[in-house]
Every structure is written in structure tokens, then in C-alpha cells.
Amino acid sequence: MSSAPPTSQPIPEMTIDWDVPIVTDDGIALMADVYRPLDEGQYPVLLSYGPYGKGLSFQEAYKPQWDYMVERYPEVAENTSNRFQNWEVVDPEKWVPDGYVCVRVDSRGAGRSPGYLDVWSPREALDLYQSIEWAGVQPWSNGRVGLAGISYYAMNQYQVAALQPPHLFAICPWEGASDFYREFSRHGGILCQFPADWYPRQVKDVQHGVGKRGHVGFDGRLVAGPDTHSEAELNELRADLGADVKSRHLLEEWHLERNPDWAKVQVPMLSSGNWGGHGLHLRGNVEAYVRAASDQKWLEVHGEAHWVDFYTDRGIALQKTFFDHFLKGEDNGWDRRPPVQLRIRQADGSVVDRFEEEWPLGRTVWTRFNLTTLGTLSTQTINTGSIEYDPASEGITFMTRPFERETEVTGPMSARLFIASETEDADLFLVVRLFDPDDREVTFMGALDPNTPLAQGWLRASHRELDPRLTTPYQPHHTHRRSLPLVPGETYEVQVEIWPTSIVVPAGYKLGLTVRGNDYRYEGELTDFAMNFHYANRGIGPFIHDDPDDRPAELFGGKVTIHVGGRTDSHLLVPVIPPRGKD
Image 1 (cartoon, rainbow, N blue to C red):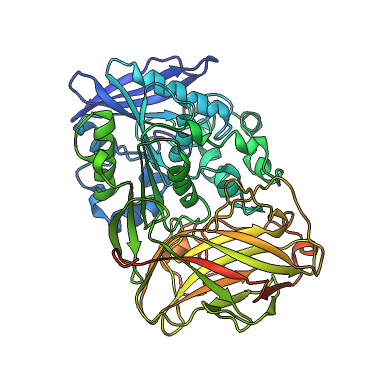
Image 2: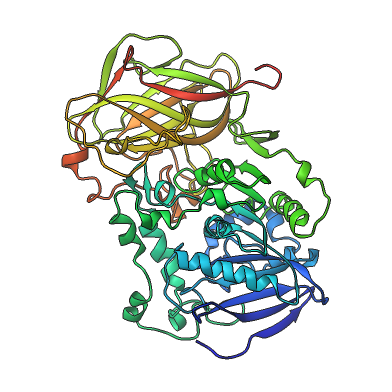
């Protein structure tokens, strides 16, 4: 660890203090960069703490994402030199001139901060707590600290908010998961490959001690610290996230200690989600809004790519209005703002902004679409029967009739299925889809993939046990505490949570529900971005479920029968939203 004192560098409209040490209770010095106004004074603080390297250039390390963003939204690169752009955190050149101090902290064991790297661990949450308290008492601070950032920099906001640091006055988790088991590790109990892919690609590459083998930052320093360790030394200084996730089939304390205690999350919060965030963040933002104990909380949901809207003029204006109110004390009307703001998606990819008073929307008409043996979705009572599919196939797609009039669908969904498997288990992949009058699928720009369907849900049938305290008709909540194998050939009721969505279905279009035994696959043409962005795939991004150890064919390869009608009324529950005044 370098013992050199931090340096300060004045540039137009701000002063930067590089590598300011924040000494934690166990003696580790976390390194922070502080961007502050030139004029002496006390200012509100926006802080971020994470493992991506505080000095790593966005444009260098995440070039495809940067190019995508500035091509579609050139405003992002305007009114700033872009010299200090850093992945998923605020651009100080767009905040410091408005009277904010921006603090970026490299998390323990990452970037220029030494220590043992263990992502989202209780130790990290405590480090973030102590970073907030440090920032709250600095001579340039007004004592009010806010947290802002995307993804990782959102997820740990929930964790630390539950610890209730006294100087934390507001949080803005932007596209951040909140349940380490259900949203990050295992979807419906099925192992997701994303953690094992993300960790070496985005975290190990900037682990403290990579040193000279790593990047040089925009500050001229080595992003991953002044010292260069061997691979063996680096292995000893980090947890093995992929193995940790894979080895834990059921919900354990290891997952729970990375989840927030919602009863203790009482700070003012703006939770901002993405309709296309299936597989990681969307559920977390909605859960945060619904379950947090704060009596000052707001939900905003948008579309577009994961990293885009945070940096647009619209996104920055939204954040600034929120933080100006809670960190500066401005009476700007934020406290009178409706609690829910949604960008309602249209079939052509456009959006319509609308305020609402609650989530799910109070005027929702919960509509049952029954699955039929003919492969249709019907609102009518149907005859009993069954239909079978091979889990190695594309499954079965059940389709509605063409909608007679424009119909909005916004909110969470669920499916109740009566199934029998040839084997002792079955993995269910449910996909809600939109089709035009020519039966061509309409897909949307998702958080990480440009060809995402409307919504997805997953369930391992042996994980069908529900928690009655948290389960609702529109959102089943599974315990994931024990495995209940199936008796081959016997029929079981399973309820599947389908993550929220929003779409205005035009007249003549259809909704479809695909039930299959493997990941959704978009079969249309791919753009250059879809072919070259490493996280893009055929409609599901990096959220793949194909680990052969987790899904052996002898357990998950048997044919599945869906029973319909009568007492086995398999159906999809859809949130239809009537126009205001017509509910």
C-alpha cells in the first residue's frame, strides 16, 4: 500500500483530491477520489463504493457501451470534457458545478484499495457505512450524504441503508437487484451463469494487486494499485464467487447476509428500474419500493440499455431534483411528486411518461388467460385436457386471439400450472411475448440485450413451496429452503413468478406465453451491437441457465405434461390497465 499523501489537482470548475485514505475500523485504508467545487464551503456529497476501478475510463474499458450511448444520446458527451467518465457512476463535471462533492471509493480488495475481495459481503457493507460517515464530517461536507450509481453501486445501497448510517440522507439505487438468491444467483432455483461470467470479466480484472498487468487510469495511476502480485497471491486475496454461488442450491445465510432488512431501510429513496432488466435488476427495484419501510420513497421505471438513462439529460434532471430536495433542502416540489413514474412502452419502441399513485396500479383488472390444448390463451372456461412438450425443444407457445382494441398491460404477472414430469424434477422457463398481426414477434431493447421479450419467469418444480406471508395472487414468493422432488407421472400445482412488464398492445396484436424447458432464444436477425457486445445473446443477455452440473439430463430431461381445464385450470394472470376514469 502506498504511503504517499493524497494529491490535489485543480481543473476548471473543480478540485480533485486523488487517493484520499478512508481508514476503516480494522485498519484497512480504502482509497477515495474526491471531486469538489473550487470555492471553499460545505456541500452535499454524492458517494459511490464499488469494485470497478475508480480511475478506469468508461470509454476505454466499456467502449461498445459508450459508443452505443453517445451515438443515440449525444447529450451525454456534451457540456463535459468526459475526462472523468467512469462506469456506472456520476460524471462529476455535471454535478460539481451545481454544488455537489462527488466521492468515488474503491471497494476493499479492488482498484487501489487493499484487502480481501468479497463482493456484497457484510464487511463491504460496513466499509460503505464507514465511508459515508467519513464523508459526512469532512470540512467540505454539509453533513448530508447521498448514494447514486447503477447496478453494483445500487445493490449495496440497500445493504448499507439497512445499517442506518447517521449521515446518509438519501439513496438512488438505479437498476439494482436486491435479492442475492432470487435475482442474482438462481432464478426460481435454477443456477444462473451470469455471476461466474461477470466476476472474472469485470471484477478480477481490476482486483487490487493486478497492478502493472492492468489498466492505467485517466489520473495517470495504475487502476488496480501500485503493487503487482502474482496470480497465486491474487487468488488468496479474493473469494471465488462462481463457486460460492454454484455450491449453494438452496437459500442460505450466505445469501441472506447480502440481502437488506427491509424494515430497517428507512432513508428517502428513489428506486429506478428498467422494463428490460429481466434476469437481474428489475425485480429488485420494484421490491425495494414495495418493501422498504421508508415513508418517503419513489419508483421510476424506464426502458433502454442498462447504462444509458442514468447519464441522459432526463435521468440527471430526475436525480438532481431528488437529491436537491433531500441533500440541499430545496423546496422544489419533489415531496409533492406522485410516488410512481412509469415510461409506458409502445409496440413501436416509443414510450409515454405517466405518474401513478401506487404499485401495482390500483385500477388493475387482473385478467386470467386459460391455457388450452389447442395452444391458445382464452378468457373463457375451457374443457379439461393435457398437452406435452420436450424440455430440449422450443416448448409450447399459447397465443391469445388478436386484441380487438388497444390494451395496456402493466405490472407483475404470474402463472399457475398443473404439470407432470417423466422425471423427478422439471425446470420451467416462461416467456411472455408480443406478436404483430402477421405473427412476427416484437422484441425490445433490454437492459443488456437488444432483442428481449416482454417478460420472463423461471421455476424449478422441486422449489414450488410458497411463503404464505409474502405470496400474492400476482406474485408468488417461493421459500427456496428445501427441495421437494416430484413423483414421475403425478400432477403438481406450481405457481411461477413472472417479472413485471409494461406494453400497450395495439389492436390486432397478440400476446403469447411460451412454456419451455430451456432459455428463450430470439431467432431473428441480429444487429452489429448484438453480435459484438459480449453480454448480448439471443434475447436473454448473459442470464443463461445451462450448467450441466445443475441441470443433469436424467433429472431435467423428461417430457413435461401441462394439464388444463376444470380443477387443473392452468392459466396466466395478466395486469390489464384501463384508462383512468374507465376502471
